[in-house]
Length: 233
Image: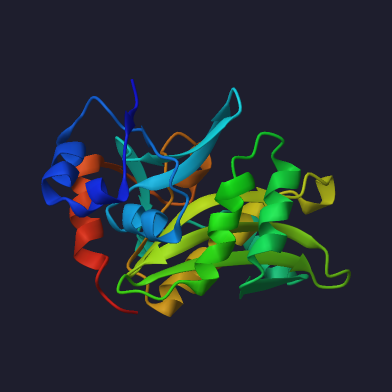
């Protein structure tokens, strides 16, 4: 059973405390794709995806049980990525061409959830003006010669915390490990820009721990997240 959630729920401290302390539930659902709902959910520590079934399309804010967190002092760079760094045949970019990166993600992932109203919500975030320090971020690696996008991702900042949403990397053999290169370059960019840590989301993928991430339980994650969500870079 997944409970319905509204913006008023997110604005109610007692409801938020209940959700954070409810260790039996992690997903909630809503039909509110407004940027105000999305940003408030992100501010409270939810990571939102979308879901479609029987012609019903909803947003699924998740208060995860566990999180993979990267503190930049723990960043690990493999020998293969070090070799690519020296090769220097790429260009790393952080930009606002959100739609281009989203389209690449959807092209790569046949079951991508960044579609329909969810995609439009992300694009609408460009126009956000409010009290929460929120910003959508997109990054990519391009082949220096062909300008072809090899890898990239989209995510957002709340205060001094960056949270990943989804990403992609080329399946061409000659671009092996460029997805890992993109992660390392993004980590370096975030550190140099003054971010406190990187929320890599679910801790179920090995590459996150190969990168240097640490496993945090919900309560511990929310403690460090709340310390940083109102700070400025």
